[in-house]
Amino acid sequence: MTNLPRFRTLPRGSFFLFGPRGTGKTTWLRSVLPGALVVDLLKSEEYRRLSARPERLAERVRGAPTGSDVVIDEIQRVPELLNVVHSLMQSGRGHRFILTGSSARKLRRGGVNLLAGRAALHTMHPFMAREMGTRFDLDTSLNLGTVPTVVDADDPKSALAAYASLYVEQEVRAEGLARDVGSFSRFLEAAAFSHAATLNVSEVARECETSRSTVAGYIELLEDLLLAFRLPVFTRRAKRRLVSHPRFFYFDCGVFRSLRPSGPLDRPDEIGGAALEGLLAQHLRAWLAYRESDAKLYYWRTRGGAEVDFVLYGTSGIWAFDIMNADRIRPADLRGLSAFGDEYPEARRVLLYRGKYRLLRRGVLCLPVGDFLRVLDPGRGLGDAVE
Image (cartoon, rainbow, N blue to C red; front, side):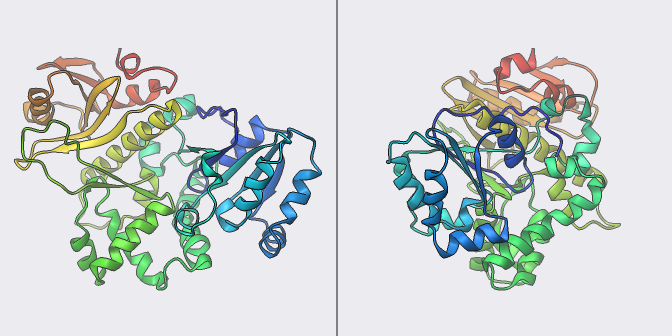
């Protein structure tokens, strides 16, 4: 995998590093910790040895120099190792442990030792446009996404097509997380129609011809596998009646497009618009995670239909972003941001679109979306990105 510079910085102490497969966790750790002791649980021999006797990890670590770094890849495969790590952290030999994972399910639900808060939780995301530099192309990213393992593949289209199968085969089937893998595969396709939309679990269940409780469990499974996330409604100091359902997103717009069935009745602008919203969502999530900001990401929608795609709220203020897959702005396109500004006059409002020019209309800053993504940098505030 190409070693492009990443915005993720190396914490001082021990930490968990979670992220979907292929987002570059291992590549990044090799670049920033070249001398670390690495325990790769994706290797069959390593997995068998340590799952049979977790205490063997202590023997390996005690043989390493005092104060050395220890990387354990895919820790969720042998959660019992966390008890050994906890004991080693208390031994006083100064080791720093970095525990990576592509699934939080077993760690959250298995009642395992999560190191009693001794290790911070950090995340790795698909490439941001600024990380890719001159390799970033908006149209290519909308079609293929920005997952590093796909971006760097000799045949990105084939790599993307295989990505969902990788999760179904290695995460779902191998770990027995879903009894009916065929039903889960149908759900992956059905859920793609809800990408960037308000999530209605009952409608997805009807599409899958299964129960609502089964679909609810599948959605939680996607979130545990870090393949998807839900965006809550922003309700602070709300004066208007708001919707209550969250919005649903796959973690990468390319993965969404690979799962979304298409045919002659589909409008390209509909699929492209959902992909564009997803690309912005994954960039804002990465910006928040790498900046370690206290801000949270939401969306806003009234019962009357006024909507803002993304709201960032934290101690630094309120930002409202709308995004549109068009190169011209009509008055109606500003309706959601105008309504949000009436309710939250302190908010900074930005409309991102596919045009070429910076505009200011009715107090809303309108920017080319590609330009915004290229300058979005966790080391700088959002104000810098829109100036």
